[in-house]
Amino acid sequence: MNPFQILSMLNQIQSNPMQMLSQKFNIPDGVNTNDPNAILNHLINSNQVSQNQINSIKNNPMLRQFMR
Image (cartoon, rainbow, N blue to C red):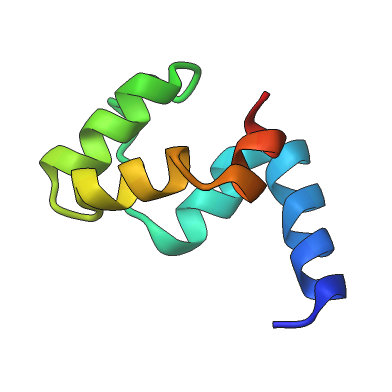
């Protein structure tokens, strides 16, 4: 993936995070999409992502700067 693709993805997730997430993950209407923790809990509980994957993202210094 080239830097322009990464920047495009970053802009897309900042402008409409649910659209970006819905391209890869199944998030049903019953999940409060205004609550990031509800989304993460659903993804973990439905085995779409693991807790280790979440921890890796949270501990990645490059990604943490975008999560502020």
